[in-house]
Length: 78
Image 1 (cartoon, rainbow, N blue to C red):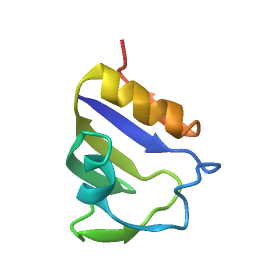
Image 2 (image 1 turned 30 degrees about the horizontal axis):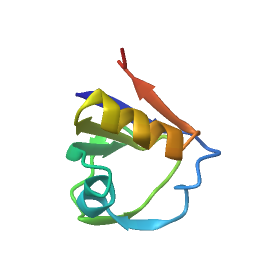
Image 3 (image 1 turned 180 degrees about the vertical axis):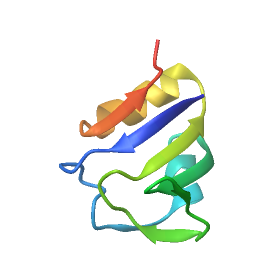
């Protein structure tokens, strides 16, 4: 389990996603999402820089996500 922070240069910024669906394609489960320290309850959001996602998956799958998206900050990776 780790936290992912969206960097301002991320290709995700400004795009609209169904959050669970997006992380599922990497075999990762989205546990929580927040913006400005407040939970995001919508199922579909437009991603902004600084958005935070609590995710769970194998480190192999999390590393795959990181390789696909250079501008994500992964907190707590081994």
